[in-house]
Length: 375
Ligand SMILES: Cc1cc2nc3c(=O)[nH]c(=O)nc-3n(C[C@H](O)[C@H](O)[C@H](O)COP(=O)(O)O)c2cc1C
Image 1 (cartoon, protein in one colour):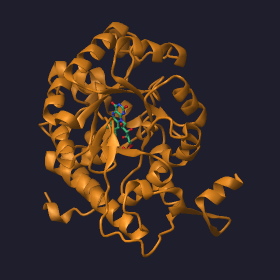
Image 2 (spheres, helix red, strand yellow; image 1 turned 120 degrees about the vertical axis):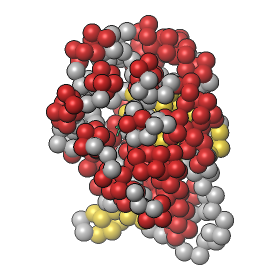
Image 3 (spheres, protein in one colour; image 1 turned 135 degrees about the horizontal axis):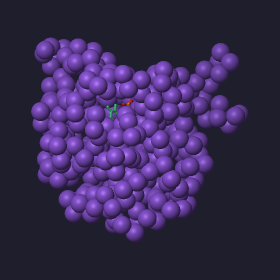
């Protein structure tokens, strides 16, 4: 394994980490649905937006803190929910939670943990909460046909001290992930039984995703069964963001599941502006997908996101050096964001606005807001 100081960017972290895992693990983490066009689009889209830095603005004190669920965080990057951290490190999600706590940020816990914990292939939601304490606030949820299971799970995570659920809404049906289908016979048992892959097996286990869900039914149902905040993960259009506000949800996460669901889908950074425009600050708007550099965090905030989450880089950090690898990954993003803020003339997160963004239109560099106004 390379020494810590050799890894200076998330690109380097990815390359070192993926060298040390099996092909099946690597493909499970890396690949998305279909031809991976959404996965690739998420990262590629960032570079279309270029920065317009300002000079001489006194950046001797840069404050990167933000508030999420009433808690002050050290910087605007959290750990997105993904299952099966024990594939990467024996501490699993408990180690990730400790890293989130040490970094002064938050972690979203994947529902896969609650299912896997019964086979000891994952940490339980309670264990993760104890390990990460106030860094563990969000529990990611899928609604299965077996509503009784969901009701019990809601009670359980509420009792464990979670503050909010993140209902993943981009999973009405399961995306067609080629490598998961191909690797399935060779996957670890817990992934075969519980992870997405065979609708038939899920149905047998009562864990089939409920494809019947509609806005008017599911939000009131959740409100009826939990006092935790309700956030929706997987919003990609102004229409759905408007409905989310109308239905009284507490926050949304602009996400396309890291490209693991709909191939050919809009990149999340491209979806963000129309969503921010209709939400108008009524509820927090977070985003994830393709964030690999501090400048990507800056771009997302400049477009109006209040906070961003990273998915795959967490798994690379874990595979590289367990809990410390996740801390390293967050430290790199923190350092890069700080430098980006210094060089653009922003000394607080509030100062990061769309004035700092531009894009090339018809061969000419133009202010982002001017381009949007012409649309
Ligand atoms: C291996 C893997 C497992 C994931 N599992 C879940 C999950 O159980 N629930 C969920 O809502 N999102 C899941 N996600 C999506 C992430 O929460 C997040 O939306 C996405 O990874 C962000 O994109 P990025 O990986 O480009 O940062 C998973 C992502 C990966 C890579």
